[in-house]
Image (cartoon, rainbow, N blue to C red; front, side, top):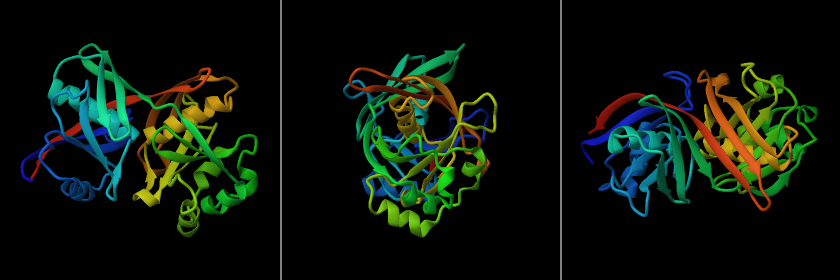
Amino acid sequence: MSNLNFCIVDVFAQEKYTGNQLAVFTNAAQISDEQMQKIAKEMNYSETTFITSTEMRSGGYDVRIFTPEQELPFAGHPTLGTAYVLQQEIIKQQVETIILNLKIGQIPVKMNYRGEDVDILWMQQKPPTFHGVLSAEALSPVLNLELEEIDFRFPIQEVSTGVPFIIVPLKSHSALQRIKVNKDKYFELVNTTEAKAILVFCPDTYNADNDLSVRMFADYLGVPEDPATGSANGCLAGYLVEYSYLGKQAIDIRVEQGYEIGRPSLLLLKAEKKAESIDVFVGGQVIMVAKGKFV
Protein backbone atom coordinates (compact mmCIF):
# COMPACT_ATOMS: atom_id res chain seq x y z
CA MET A 1 0.00 0.00 0.00
CA SER A 2 3.05 2.26 -0.25
CA ASN A 3 3.68 5.09 -2.72
CA LEU A 4 0.06 5.88 -3.47
CA ASN A 5 -0.23 9.27 -5.14
CA PHE A 6 -2.94 11.63 -3.96
CA CYS A 7 -4.18 15.19 -4.42
CA ILE A 8 -6.02 17.41 -1.96
CA VAL A 9 -8.60 19.70 -3.57
CA ASP A 10 -11.16 22.20 -2.33
CA VAL A 11 -14.54 21.59 -3.98
CA PHE A 12 -17.30 24.21 -4.31
CA ALA A 13 -14.61 26.68 -3.26
CA GLN A 14 -14.50 30.39 -4.04
CA GLU A 15 -10.85 30.51 -2.95
CA LYS A 16 -8.30 28.12 -1.43
CA TYR A 17 -9.27 26.71 1.98
CA THR A 18 -12.96 27.31 1.49
CA GLY A 19 -15.40 24.72 0.20
CA ASN A 20 -15.21 21.02 1.04
CA GLN A 21 -11.78 19.36 1.05
CA LEU A 22 -11.29 16.02 -0.66
CA ALA A 23 -8.42 13.56 -0.97
CA VAL A 24 -8.23 11.84 -4.38
CA PHE A 25 -5.92 8.82 -4.82
CA THR A 26 -4.87 8.57 -8.46
CA ASN A 27 -3.25 5.10 -8.67
CA ALA A 28 -5.45 2.88 -6.49
CA ALA A 29 -6.01 -0.06 -8.86
CA GLN A 30 -4.07 -2.56 -6.75
CA ILE A 31 -5.39 -1.90 -3.24
CA SER A 32 -8.23 -3.77 -1.55
CA ASP A 33 -11.57 -2.50 -0.29
CA GLU A 34 -10.30 -2.88 3.27
CA GLN A 35 -7.25 -0.77 2.49
CA MET A 36 -9.39 1.94 0.90
CA GLN A 37 -11.60 2.02 3.97
CA LYS A 38 -8.58 2.25 6.26
CA ILE A 39 -7.08 5.11 4.24
CA ALA A 40 -10.39 7.00 4.21
CA LYS A 41 -10.54 6.72 7.98
CA GLU A 42 -6.95 7.94 8.34
CA MET A 43 -7.49 10.86 5.93
CA ASN A 44 -10.65 11.73 7.91
CA TYR A 45 -12.30 13.95 5.30
CA SER A 46 -16.06 13.60 4.83
CA GLU A 47 -15.19 11.49 1.75
CA THR A 48 -12.03 10.17 0.07
CA THR A 49 -12.00 8.88 -3.51
CA PHE A 50 -9.91 6.24 -5.26
CA ILE A 51 -9.35 6.19 -9.02
CA THR A 52 -9.04 2.48 -9.83
CA SER A 53 -8.65 2.76 -13.62
CA THR A 54 -6.52 5.36 -15.38
CA GLU A 55 -7.78 4.05 -18.73
CA MET A 56 -11.41 4.47 -19.73
CA ARG A 57 -13.78 1.56 -19.25
CA SER A 58 -17.12 1.80 -21.10
CA GLY A 59 -16.35 5.45 -21.73
CA GLY A 60 -15.61 6.36 -18.12
CA TYR A 61 -13.09 6.06 -15.28
CA ASP A 62 -13.68 3.66 -12.38
CA VAL A 63 -13.91 5.53 -9.06
CA ARG A 64 -14.73 4.42 -5.51
CA ILE A 65 -16.02 6.79 -2.80
CA PHE A 66 -15.51 6.15 0.93
CA THR A 67 -16.45 8.07 4.05
CA PRO A 68 -14.43 7.29 7.21
CA GLU A 69 -17.18 4.77 8.02
CA GLN A 70 -18.39 3.19 4.76
CA GLU A 71 -18.43 3.17 0.96
CA LEU A 72 -20.99 5.35 -0.81
CA PRO A 73 -22.62 4.67 -4.19
CA PHE A 74 -22.53 8.38 -5.07
CA ALA A 75 -21.58 11.72 -3.56
CA GLY A 76 -21.47 15.17 -5.09
CA HIS A 77 -18.26 16.94 -4.11
CA PRO A 78 -16.18 13.72 -4.60
CA THR A 79 -17.58 13.44 -8.13
CA LEU A 80 -16.61 16.99 -9.12
CA GLY A 81 -13.28 16.88 -7.28
CA THR A 82 -12.27 13.56 -8.82
CA ALA A 83 -13.22 14.68 -12.33
CA TYR A 84 -11.00 17.75 -11.83
CA VAL A 85 -8.06 15.60 -10.70
CA LEU A 86 -8.56 13.22 -13.63
CA GLN A 87 -8.34 16.16 -16.05
CA GLN A 88 -5.35 17.75 -14.32
CA GLU A 89 -3.24 14.69 -13.44
CA ILE A 90 -4.20 11.85 -15.80
CA ILE A 91 -5.77 13.22 -19.00
CA LYS A 92 -3.69 16.43 -18.95
CA GLN A 93 -5.54 18.14 -21.77
CA GLN A 94 -8.79 20.01 -22.24
CA VAL A 95 -11.79 17.72 -22.60
CA GLU A 96 -15.45 18.64 -22.66
CA THR A 97 -16.83 15.83 -20.50
CA ILE A 98 -15.40 13.27 -18.10
CA ILE A 99 -17.54 10.30 -17.07
CA LEU A 100 -17.08 8.63 -13.69
CA ASN A 101 -18.08 5.00 -13.29
CA LEU A 102 -19.50 4.95 -9.75
CA LYS A 103 -21.42 2.32 -7.80
CA ILE A 104 -24.65 4.09 -8.75
CA GLY A 105 -23.72 4.08 -12.46
CA GLN A 106 -22.13 6.55 -14.84
CA ILE A 107 -22.13 10.23 -13.85
CA PRO A 108 -20.99 12.75 -16.51
CA VAL A 109 -19.10 15.90 -15.50
CA LYS A 110 -18.91 18.77 -17.98
CA MET A 111 -15.75 20.89 -17.86
CA ASN A 112 -15.95 24.62 -18.58
CA TYR A 113 -12.70 26.52 -19.08
CA ARG A 114 -11.46 30.06 -18.52
CA GLY A 115 -8.63 30.27 -21.00
CA GLU A 116 -6.43 27.25 -20.31
CA ASP A 117 -7.76 26.72 -16.78
CA VAL A 118 -10.74 24.72 -15.60
CA ASP A 119 -13.44 27.08 -14.38
CA ILE A 120 -16.85 25.62 -13.43
CA LEU A 121 -17.51 21.87 -13.42
CA TRP A 122 -21.08 20.58 -13.76
CA MET A 123 -22.30 17.09 -12.92
CA GLN A 124 -25.61 15.72 -14.13
CA GLN A 125 -27.18 13.73 -11.32
CA LYS A 126 -29.71 10.93 -11.58
CA PRO A 127 -33.34 12.15 -11.78
CA PRO A 128 -34.63 12.72 -8.24
CA THR A 129 -37.12 10.37 -6.63
CA PHE A 130 -39.48 11.44 -3.85
CA HIS A 131 -40.19 9.24 -0.86
CA GLY A 132 -41.57 9.50 2.67
CA VAL A 133 -43.02 12.73 4.07
CA LEU A 134 -42.12 13.45 7.70
CA SER A 135 -43.91 15.58 10.26
CA ALA A 136 -42.63 18.86 11.66
CA GLU A 137 -43.21 17.36 15.10
CA ALA A 138 -40.63 14.67 14.27
CA LEU A 139 -38.01 17.12 12.97
CA SER A 140 -38.25 20.12 15.30
CA PRO A 141 -36.80 18.35 18.39
CA VAL A 142 -33.98 16.86 16.28
CA LEU A 143 -32.95 20.36 15.20
CA ASN A 144 -33.86 22.11 18.48
CA LEU A 145 -36.28 24.42 16.66
CA GLU A 146 -39.80 25.58 17.39
CA LEU A 147 -42.56 24.19 15.20
CA GLU A 148 -43.41 27.64 13.85
CA GLU A 149 -39.87 28.03 12.46
CA ILE A 150 -40.53 25.31 9.85
CA ASP A 151 -42.15 26.44 6.59
CA PHE A 152 -45.42 24.49 6.48
CA ARG A 153 -46.16 25.56 2.89
CA PHE A 154 -43.84 22.79 1.70
CA PRO A 155 -43.34 19.18 2.85
CA ILE A 156 -40.49 17.75 4.87
CA GLN A 157 -39.56 14.90 2.57
CA GLU A 158 -36.97 12.26 1.76
CA VAL A 159 -35.54 12.91 -1.71
CA SER A 160 -32.82 10.98 -3.54
CA THR A 161 -30.64 11.41 -6.62
CA GLY A 162 -28.63 8.37 -5.58
CA VAL A 163 -28.20 9.05 -1.86
CA PRO A 164 -31.36 10.03 0.06
CA PHE A 165 -31.65 13.17 2.20
CA ILE A 166 -34.39 14.59 4.39
CA ILE A 167 -35.16 18.06 2.99
CA VAL A 168 -36.44 20.56 5.58
CA PRO A 169 -37.72 24.05 4.58
CA LEU A 170 -37.27 26.79 7.19
CA LYS A 171 -38.78 30.25 7.32
CA SER A 172 -35.77 32.31 8.39
CA HIS A 173 -32.01 32.57 8.41
CA SER A 174 -32.00 33.01 12.18
CA ALA A 175 -33.67 29.61 12.58
CA LEU A 176 -31.10 28.00 10.26
CA GLN A 177 -28.24 29.61 12.19
CA ARG A 178 -29.54 28.47 15.59
CA ILE A 179 -29.84 24.76 14.75
CA LYS A 180 -28.15 22.51 17.27
CA VAL A 181 -28.70 18.85 16.45
CA ASN A 182 -29.86 16.65 19.32
CA LYS A 183 -27.83 13.53 18.54
CA ASP A 184 -30.03 11.12 20.50
CA LYS A 185 -33.19 12.30 18.73
CA TYR A 186 -31.36 12.40 15.40
CA PHE A 187 -30.36 8.74 15.65
CA GLU A 188 -33.87 7.79 16.82
CA LEU A 189 -35.24 9.46 13.69
CA VAL A 190 -32.81 8.08 11.09
CA ASN A 191 -33.23 4.56 12.45
CA THR A 192 -36.79 4.82 11.04
CA THR A 193 -35.96 6.45 7.68
CA GLU A 194 -34.11 5.48 4.51
CA ALA A 195 -32.33 8.86 4.53
CA LYS A 196 -29.63 9.20 7.18
CA ALA A 197 -28.77 12.85 6.52
CA ILE A 198 -30.73 16.09 6.88
CA LEU A 199 -30.51 19.19 4.69
CA VAL A 200 -32.19 22.35 5.94
CA PHE A 201 -32.59 25.46 3.83
CA CYS A 202 -34.04 28.96 3.90
CA PRO A 203 -34.48 31.83 1.43
CA ASP A 204 -32.24 34.29 3.35
CA THR A 205 -28.47 34.36 2.86
CA TYR A 206 -25.20 35.73 4.24
CA ASN A 207 -24.18 36.88 0.76
CA ALA A 208 -26.73 38.97 -1.13
CA ASP A 209 -25.55 37.47 -4.45
CA ASN A 210 -26.80 34.03 -3.36
CA ASP A 211 -30.35 32.68 -3.52
CA LEU A 212 -30.57 30.13 -0.68
CA SER A 213 -28.62 29.16 2.43
CA VAL A 214 -28.36 25.52 3.52
CA ARG A 215 -26.85 23.33 6.23
CA MET A 216 -26.41 19.54 6.14
CA PHE A 217 -26.07 17.13 9.07
CA ALA A 218 -25.05 13.45 8.75
CA ASP A 219 -23.66 12.08 12.01
CA TYR A 220 -24.76 8.60 10.93
CA LEU A 221 -22.21 8.84 8.09
CA GLY A 222 -19.54 10.30 10.36
CA VAL A 223 -20.14 13.89 9.22
CA PRO A 224 -21.66 16.04 12.00
CA GLU A 225 -21.92 18.99 9.58
CA ASP A 226 -20.67 19.25 6.00
CA PRO A 227 -19.35 22.46 4.44
CA ALA A 228 -20.62 21.64 0.92
CA THR A 229 -22.75 18.70 -0.18
CA GLY A 230 -23.35 18.21 -3.90
CA SER A 231 -25.57 15.15 -3.55
CA ALA A 232 -27.83 16.83 -0.96
CA ASN A 233 -28.07 19.99 -3.04
CA GLY A 234 -28.98 17.91 -6.09
CA CYS A 235 -31.88 16.53 -4.05
CA LEU A 236 -32.74 20.09 -3.02
CA ALA A 237 -32.73 21.21 -6.68
CA GLY A 238 -35.24 18.48 -7.54
CA TYR A 239 -37.37 19.41 -4.54
CA LEU A 240 -37.40 23.11 -5.47
CA VAL A 241 -38.79 22.49 -8.96
CA GLU A 242 -41.13 19.66 -7.90
CA TYR A 243 -42.90 22.02 -5.50
CA SER A 244 -42.28 25.28 -7.43
CA TYR A 245 -40.60 26.69 -4.32
CA LEU A 246 -39.25 29.67 -6.27
CA GLY A 247 -42.47 30.02 -8.25
CA LYS A 248 -41.35 28.03 -11.28
CA GLN A 249 -40.42 24.55 -12.43
CA ALA A 250 -36.97 25.52 -13.71
CA ILE A 251 -34.15 27.03 -11.64
CA ASP A 252 -30.64 28.42 -12.13
CA ILE A 253 -29.48 29.53 -8.68
CA ARG A 254 -26.57 30.02 -6.27
CA VAL A 255 -26.62 28.20 -2.93
CA GLU A 256 -24.32 28.94 0.02
CA GLN A 257 -23.28 26.38 2.63
CA GLY A 258 -20.61 26.01 5.32
CA TYR A 259 -20.62 29.55 6.71
CA GLU A 260 -21.50 28.36 10.22
CA ILE A 261 -18.41 26.12 10.37
CA GLY A 262 -15.96 28.57 8.82
CA ARG A 263 -15.74 27.05 5.30
CA PRO A 264 -18.03 29.17 3.12
CA SER A 265 -18.94 27.30 -0.05
CA LEU A 266 -20.84 28.10 -3.22
CA LEU A 267 -22.87 25.53 -5.14
CA LEU A 268 -24.58 26.25 -8.46
CA LEU A 269 -27.86 24.47 -9.13
CA LYS A 270 -29.79 24.05 -12.36
CA ALA A 271 -32.93 21.95 -12.62
CA GLU A 272 -35.97 21.68 -14.86
CA LYS A 273 -39.10 19.62 -14.50
CA LYS A 274 -39.89 17.68 -17.66
CA ALA A 275 -42.98 15.61 -18.44
CA GLU A 276 -41.88 12.48 -16.59
CA SER A 277 -38.72 13.44 -14.68
CA ILE A 278 -36.50 16.26 -13.48
CA ASP A 279 -33.10 17.15 -14.93
CA VAL A 280 -30.65 18.11 -12.17
CA PHE A 281 -27.21 19.70 -12.57
CA VAL A 282 -24.89 20.72 -9.73
CA GLY A 283 -21.83 22.85 -10.41
CA GLY A 284 -18.96 24.61 -8.72
CA GLN A 285 -15.28 25.38 -8.73
CA VAL A 286 -12.45 23.06 -7.69
CA ILE A 287 -9.06 24.33 -6.50
CA MET A 288 -5.89 22.26 -6.15
CA VAL A 289 -4.44 22.52 -2.63
CA ALA A 290 -1.65 19.94 -2.39
CA LYS A 291 -0.13 16.77 -3.84
CA GLY A 292 1.65 13.98 -2.02
CA LYS A 293 2.40 10.30 -1.52
CA PHE A 294 0.76 8.04 1.04
CA VAL A 295 3.44 5.74 2.47
